[in-house]
Length: 515
Image (cartoon, rainbow, N blue to C red; front, side, top):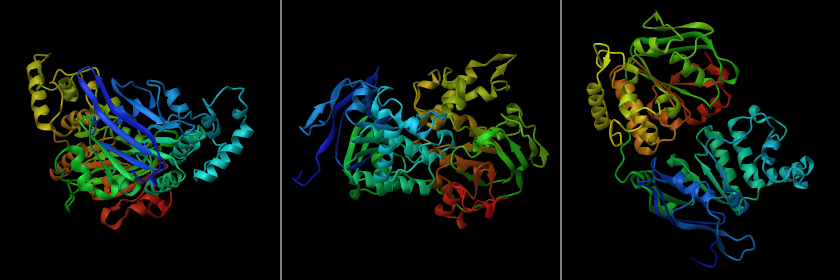
């Protein structure tokens, strides 16, 4: 350290946290200086979220302590453990991946919630508005304070979350997957804003799985693996390959799409409308061919959720029709969709992908439970179910104690492996993959991509709904963009670029290519 180095504002020292036999964090140390942006990386289950929850007071460490700079500049002082209120009072702000906003309140009302007594002068709308307008000018985080949050874009909602933290005088800002639902342009704007805030002295930690943004936006990278710190180094000493290897502990190979020759039309939608509100779809045309991956890009809430539910048989179309091999599909019937050879990887793996209270074995066979493979004389064949579990656990490296393990206790990556095994081992004709790698580390993401490309290679048609443009350009043969419920004409991935797709996701250039 030199005299010119900014002061340390936060230090986590020797943090250990156990949940029964599971050691989530083991002797982890991390420091942060004023004006520094640190990226925190690691596989799913590496301990990143646990560490940040200890920092913010949601958990209490079994060993170690958190120290934060005293407000009077007298040095680092211990932070009261297990108290989010103490963390907020000490100047620690956290923006979670899933925003904690009241949709029926205005941006101003959301920012003021919890900032003090209802009768505090600082809570007076006029005074707060003046302070916030000055804060928005300094930070570049501009939002209409009088607009209800339900009417704001995803990027604007995130600005409200950051303004909430800054209004509370945050000196340390923690962001969990901050670009997960942003367009490329919104992501660039966010990191430009974060760098400007860091230049004003704000210390920032962000968790991300996107290595490109880590390399472009951070000053330093800290890597956790299996709960332990394995690296803490300047970003300038890193590249994508090195970071990937540090995260998983070995060299990582990426599955790449090779040029294919799509066949005849397999699945078609003609002038289909369904759903209501912001997530409705209107007059959607879609053709999926044998042996192709059709990518659908879009900011969350623009109709892709309804489209996924429609193709899963969970909603009925209000207009238009669906066909498989030219024959009408029985829409609105999940069982009929499965019987037709349409398999799904749902967006929310915890809520829709598994029954959390059931075992790994039961979740692996749940969609085939009535088949003769798992029944004998009308009774379940538990031996066959157990054999299937052992086979899938070994083939897909599902890390669990065995087929009897309760599914909800597994990590997100291992839950996704259950879904992949159930979905793809049956060799479906059509695969609906909705946000299949969201929240997954680089190793688990690579396995998802490999399995989808394998399905394409076998002749299946894959509809890949994703907000991750890197994923779409790596896998998709053609890409459409969904915006406000309308789907653009698909174009070959080779003639598109991130900038154009990002603009279309935001509603620009969309009309030119709309079907």
